[in-house]
Amino acid sequence: MEDKKKGKGDKQFKKAERKLYDYKGLKADVECLEYELLILKDEYNGCKAITYTSETTGVTNNITDTVYEELIRKEKDILDKTKKINKKKIQIKKVEAAISLLDETEKKIVEARYFSNDRRKNNWNHIAKLTGYCDRQCVNIRDNLIEKIKNRL
Image 1 (tube, helix red, strand yellow):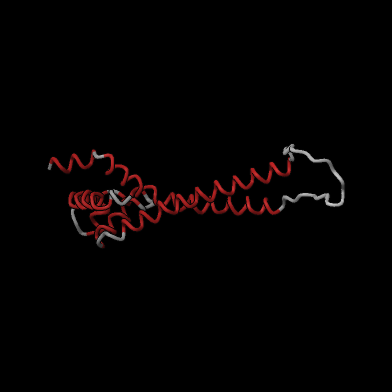
Image 2: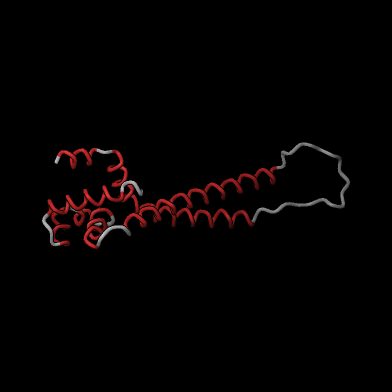
């Protein structure tokens, strides 16, 4: 009994639980970031430069061209957004891989407790009715499943 209470206070336990709660938000974040990236790329296509190949000009080492600076900034913005998207997609894949290790009852509990949009449906009484177990047993199953997957998240 003492081990279970110790497990709930464990930082990894809380971190794993937080990642399960954040799963749906991560998916929404990725979708929004992908739209933002699409907008950035569309704006990027509109950025053009003028060349003066037939003009004779002097040699200069001054690289303060505004078009060039804007191109570099947009490239950096696109790269940053892409990195954010990839990082969030990796987090999503890790959660999905961890959940794939669970049995059907454990998956039902995770779905109802962590992925439900309706706060009334993620309480233990509702989950108990959904799974056919008592609420205390659902909590115990949750504790065991978090222990099972916490190192994979």
